[in-house]
Image 1: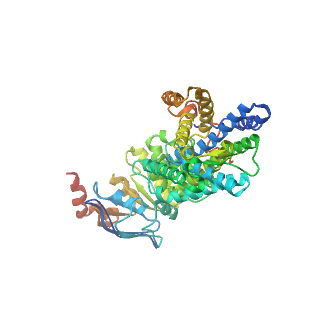
Image 2: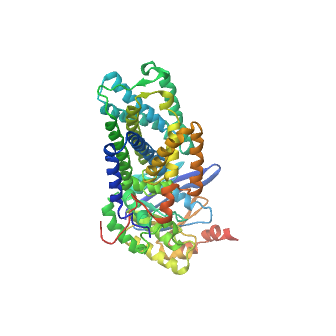
Image 3: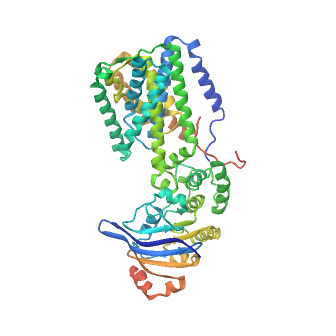
Length: 240
Length: 320
């Protein structure tokens, strides 16, 4: 298996706070990699560095064998990195269809007429066909989470960064979202996944990566990681 | 569900166009004058709306292009005897070059800093032109084309600019760039993560607006016959455009048209009151903003879903 993503010595500070500290990891194509760590461990910061919202102070990001460390967010999206936001951020004054169209036409670089077909399919996968011509700002949480996934899919990504897609949902709703994530992965898309509720994520991922205070702690299969003393100490100790 | 755009929109727009196109035949000289001002203001305000209402570029310096385009036309046709229509086009081209130069500085800024940056450029141009012998300092220049066009010709040029501005905005909004602008207006950072090229889209709109504003200014000064830096580069231009777009409905395609009609008629009737007319215009603007915060067309759209020209994309089952 080839590595789709290679991160080497990634570092980012905000003032005196080092959010991401010399972080290195890699992932293979088609993998679902769960990222876990206590609150404030720097998970979302890692996503922002990978998707190009922030530039790292040091370190290198290679995607599909190409150095993308200096590329803008929009360029990275076009290279095939899609993302969702922890708090859904649809373009509220646009309809569901228009939201997906933005991603398909700009990120996915296809014409509007070609995008229709792709979006028709995505609307079915994420279950938003009925809502397609509704303003996305007025949608309930489950639908907005589904739209986040749909938007990321519409850019035709090779890698999707999922930031708490199940957060705030009921158990039944979470199942629906998990099914969508599986469906996306079955199409060959690699996934990095942050989820606060560990049990939800452990069910869906191939491998877990644990970070604490912005640095690599350990990684392994969900069973290995969940039973590791090191993880128990840093992760679960935090709550007490 | 979002409503489909008004069914008979092309009929309404077609009728409006025919009405304006035949105005020289059935209208009085005074009506032709009003029609001309309406078309020119509609073109200029459509461009300010493209920048501020759609591209998130708050410009207070449209007068830079009005003056620059106007002077280019005046100089090329009066000094070099170049055909008047070519001179007007030249004003559009030099305005684009000016916009490119300005963008080197002001595109590093955003929001209110961008706005002040555009204004400062216009003020610099005013100072420069009023101290430049080549354009006869602050005294101003007469526009003396080799073959002076008739009032009807000038009117048709103005109508062309009005229609061109409307069509340009509509086509941009229906294009890939327009879709990106709509997303950008909602959330710039997220749109960038979805692949929208923010800098490039904004620069494109800035250059388009400069071209149409500069060209329209050329037509305007062919009509006025005389150009002078303190008027041509005055902030008053942009103040009028803000008034028009705010009362008409910012971020709507119809807003600048409705706003221009109201502005031209009002300023005619209010001109009897001299300087108080500006005060009255201001009061009218405040009342409209209080009653309809999104402007006339914006509020109508919100309340009834009525739209003549919509940038919306609806997904219907049958492809089309």
